Length: 76
Image (spheres, rainbow, N blue to C red):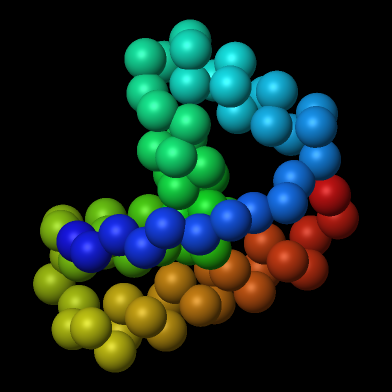
């Protein structure tokens, strides 16, 4: 998968948490951030569906979008 370099502005507390998670898991900071974004955007769910499911791409995308919408409606 192609990667693109970007610059983000994040809260100091968030960056500290990323650094701690990276150190504890032995992963790079970029990997920790990307995994968190994939989870929040529902992309990890979509990957699981494609890997283990029998749905076609359109059905899987619809399911992932519905899950994302449900998670946004729930109080945080």
